[in-house]
Image (cartoon, rainbow, N blue to C red):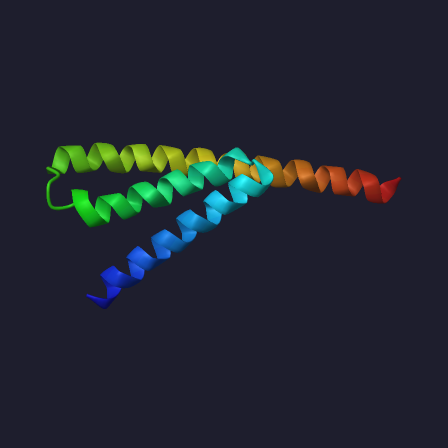
Length: 91
């Protein structure tokens, strides 16, 4: 029971934090992370008891795809920021 409550709180906090970061900086990966954690929270709260195994697998694949795209965009942004910072330091 404690684990379920902790997961729900973590998903709410991470979703809210990423949405706030998206609102401030307009980075698309923050919005994708927000969508991922929101889907995870909704799946645990409402959908877990109603889903069949096939639908659960499809939802997890969609969540995985959103998460992978968000991570790739995040890493690409960090690499670009590091390149900009390096070029500013060398000039």
